[in-house]
Amino acid sequence: MAPADKPLYYFDYLQLDRLLSAQTPLSQPAAHDELLFIVTHQAFELWFKQILFELDVVLEVMGQDVVAEKDMGEVVSRLQRITVIQRLLIDQIDVLETMTPLDFLEFRDVLIPASGFQSVQFRLIENKLGLDTRHRLKIKGAAYTSVLSSEHAAALAASEAEPSLHDHVSRWLERTPFLSRPGFDFWTAYRQAVSDMLAGDRAVIETHPTLDEGAKAEQLAMFNQTVAGFEAAFDAQRWAELVAAGKRRLPHRAFLAALLINLYRDEPIFQLPFRFLTTLIDIDEGFTTWSHRHALLAHRMIGGRIGTGGTAGHGYLEAAARRHRVFTDLFDLPTFFIPRSARPDLPAEVAEQMGFRFGYPDQRHPDQ
Ligand code: HEM
Image (tube, rainbow, N blue to C red; front, side, top):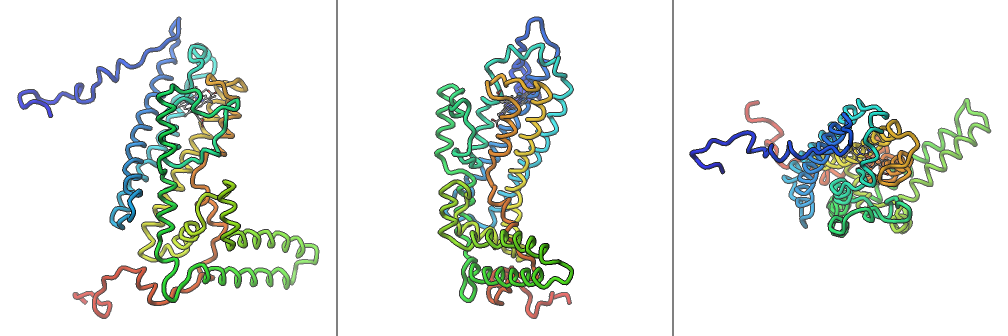
C-alpha cells in the first residue's frame, strides 16, 4: 500500500525502471533487430508467467479429493484465459517475422549456446500440463534438462514429480459417479449400442445394391479396422497394456467417463464438464499450433542450419510439435463416438439425476 501522503505513481507501481532497463543487446556493432528479438522473448516469458499463474490455480482446485461443481466454472474460466493468451503468442510471431534472416544473421552468433530451448517457464508449463516424460525428444541422447543450470534442472525435476493437470483430470474422470447407476451401466449399454450400430453398418455394405464384390470387399476391410478400434476400447486389459506402453494415457475408466460426458453432453450435469474437456483440447491445440508456427519461423530464419541451442533446428521443432502433446486421448475420443440416434436411452431416474433438481410443481412457472 502506498503511504497516504504519496499518491501511487504508474511508473513505480509497474516497476518500469527495472522492466525497461532489462534489455541489453550484445551485438557489436549494434544490430538494429536485436532489441526486437529481446523484447519479443521477454513478452513471451511474461505471458508464460501469467499462464503458470492460471495453471497453478487450476491444479489446486483439480487436486482436491472432491472437486465441487461450483469450482468448475472458475477452472474453465482460467483455462479459457490461457487459450486467449495462446492466440496472442501465435500472433506475436508475426512481429518477429518482420526481421529478415539476413538481419538475424547480424547478431545470431552472439546467442550461442543460448536458446528458447532453455526456457524454464515453457518447460514448467509442459510439465504442469502433464507432458509424458517418456515422449520427450532427447538431444544427442541427453535429457532436455541437460542444457540448464543445476537450479533450473532441479526445479523441473521437482515439477515432473508433482501431479500434473493430466493426472488430476484422469482421477476426476475416474470418480464420475454416472458410469454405473442402479439400472444403468454405461459400459454395457454403450457396447450393446456399438454392436447394434456396427451390425447395421456391415449389413449396409453387404447388401449394397450398387457396390460390386470387389468394392464390397474393400469397404469391409476398412470397416473391420473400425471394428478392431472399438474392440480395443471394449477390452480393459488390452487398454491397460496400451497405457503401460505409453500409447494411451487415460486409464480405461477415465476414458469411459470422458466418452460418457461427450455422448450425453446435453444433460445439464455434463455441460460444464464437457466445456472443461473441450478447453483442454483447445489448450493442447493452442500449444501445438504455436509449436508448428515456431518451427516455420525457425525454418524461414535459419533454413537448414542447426539451432543456437544445438538441436537439428526446424526438423527437431517439427518433431517436437508432433510428439509433445498432452491430451491426445481426448483428441482420439471421436473415434469411439456413436450418433445420438444410436445412443442408449437413459433410464428416467438416471436422466432426472443428471438434470437440475429444481422444478416448479407441474413444470409450470408461478406466473403462468
Ligand atoms: C528468430 C527467431 C527464432 C528462431 C530462429 C528460433 C529457433 C529455435 C530453434 C532452432 C530451436 C530448437 C533448439 C535449438 O537448437 O536452439 C528453438 C527452440 C525453442 N524456442 Fe525458438 N526461435 C526463435 C524465436 C523464439 C521465440 C520468440 C520464442 C518465445 C519464447 C522461442 C521459444 C522457443 C522454445 C520454447 C523452444 C523449445 C521448443 C521445444 O523444445 O519444443 N523461440 N527455437
